[in-house]
Length: 178
Image 1 (cartoon, rainbow, N blue to C red):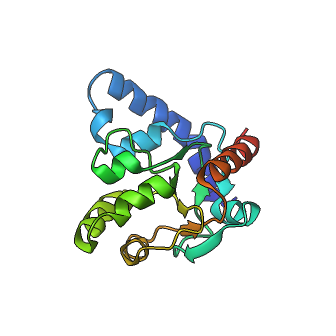
Image 2: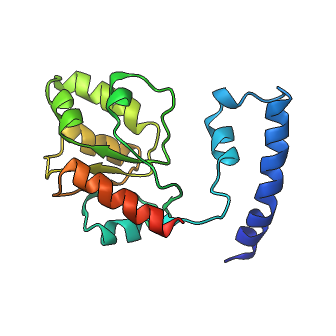
């Protein structure tokens, strides 16, 4: 690790404690700050899985590579199906989770016209999820590809069923992040 990375690892727990104190004393409002939430919920053991390792291990097809793919890391072993997010319910959305678009989400998007699909997908991609996986060899909507490029989010494909992929992803991440 470079010197600044070592200093950050030493300093970050102190910053987390200070911010947590300020939140508890109502000087800062955690609920309204994505950045503050991310700082307070950083992986305490500093374990991570590089996105490139995840792609290779689960044999994913790359639809769009983000410009920072070599520097992107998965910090938590959680995955998410973004159906509610696509409908507009943003509360509790965590962009650190791997976002999995399966047949249900795909069918919903397929039923929308191009303008509506772009609108709903943009609200999703603007949150900058760590990565998005399309399961079942589902074809990629043009709007999805365009927004992955616009927001520089890795977009991947898998030939496996959604539940099979979720199971494999969670198992792999639980081992690697334990």
